[in-house]
Length: 364
Image (cartoon, rainbow, N blue to C red; front, side):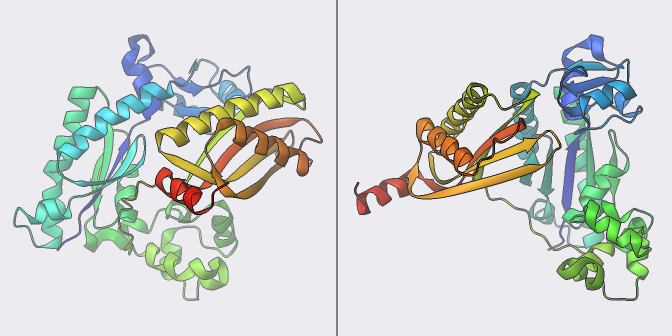
């Protein structure tokens, strides 16, 4: 069966939702995030703002300097999640298999859908996905007033690169016969799994483009370790990763960045209590309990530390989580100087039914 993967990526999603909901913002450089006079980062930037070099995860103060006429808008996460549900309801209506990566991005497997139409040739199957992609883009724009970019290819690696190729409102198909040529001029960093550290190592070895990786005569394990053989395969567009359809929650966390670094105990305790309440609420909604608690601190110089503790008995209550977090901070002496960020998280999660079984087998 020919494999047909689409990658759907909403264009500047948060900023586009804000521009759609408020006509006064249309055509203006919209920056979703904290105001430039407060500590915080950019969550999203409209394409008008990106022309000034503004991008997500950039400090808001930097964004304000680069784009002095930028319109800063506080994030409305509930609104974005609501919009995401509407969009992906329409995606699932098509009958494709969906791996939703985030609120605005997903991989779609149309292989079975297209095979049912009698298409057997791999190249013909990719071409047959074009009407599906065009129809999906048109429906999202007509019914939701937003644009999406879609890439079509035979695997996840290529489909994602294709969706990035002609943003915004792009539609790109990469035939298998053209994949090596398509990849050659792209930077190594474009490949899945190549982060800043690996890219720097490759650059020092004179490998700047994917074409350089394709032509490299040596063993890439000398540069990228065990990732070397996979990196070589990716350089030629070979990727056999399946869609990840698991919906299991593996961890839950909450973080807070303070406007000013602080070591004030009442402030930190209040922050932890709010985070514990938020996490406990999510545990309850997912019918889960946790066995591991983790605290995260970041100091003014951006040094970041995490410490965790596991318990035999699962816990679900906010008060238990709060007390363990306070104990862990004190045990590790993490508040020895003012904190820029404080975070709390839980992992090693169990379903409530498993917790009840544990209690029955290990009565208190």
